[in-house]
Length: 389
Image (cartoon, rainbow, N blue to C red; front, side):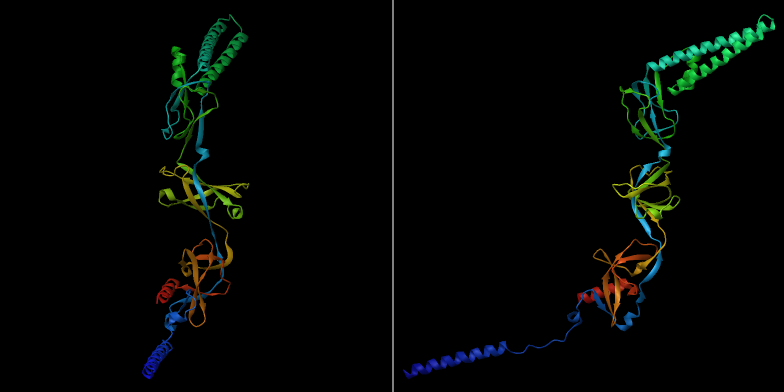
């Protein structure tokens, strides 16, 4: 019995000693490590540089500058309406032939379509009657001159016949002009006068050189005078039209130069003059229409192409910083501001459109802030390197 009790005490003592050893290990002091620069950093947007490196950066205070802002708006290419003509039939009739399609280049007098019309026949008969009357009047005047020499008639009779000839010639010219308005050319009128040949069709003819940009006629349809059947435009000179916000409309006037960029032409740069500034504001878009005229000798500017218009506004006094001070981070604009002890902080700012070497400061920085104006890009690289370490 005593032997059993002694053995139990030895086991208990052994377990107690083992537990004490485990507790001592668990509560032992761990080795301390010296704090690093990464451990002490409290803001990932901050960077600390040495005194030697700080001399490589230029620091300036944010101040008021005279800035001439650029106004940037969207625009589109349109045909110059002063060089656009809408062509229709001069008589009522049925279209028998369409001779031009959209995109065709045409010249003045070129037939675009032909129309069969009873009005044309009636007008040609009227021209023949006027020509016959004029011929008879000419012969009557000639006989009267012979008779007056023979002292058969008096001078009053000669004057009456000369007056009738004048009226007959005027009626003939009017009948010829009417045929021209109906689409008959001089050659056709001469054949009608000399041979009596009637033309069965009137031509719908182009009135200027250009490109057919619209066709509203099909073979077989009945055309009325005044119906626009074709639209022809001279695209050697086009308009760039944009909508200017009403807040900036007062800074733009006719005659100003506009820089134009056309994405469809590889962001090709163009320059034009403002030829029109609207006098009213659109109630839907709260904008004012402006129009710029641009030469298009190569015909590569097509109507309805999109464009970007940049217009220089009036000079104004505003907070502005140099463009080289800006750092792009996460698709936003930032600048480095100077803190004590050679520390610098990357700070977001809201900037306006660039004007030369300056960017207006809209929000984010007060006047007098010390900012890095030269070397900001390299400072940001140093900040990123320190952050990785």
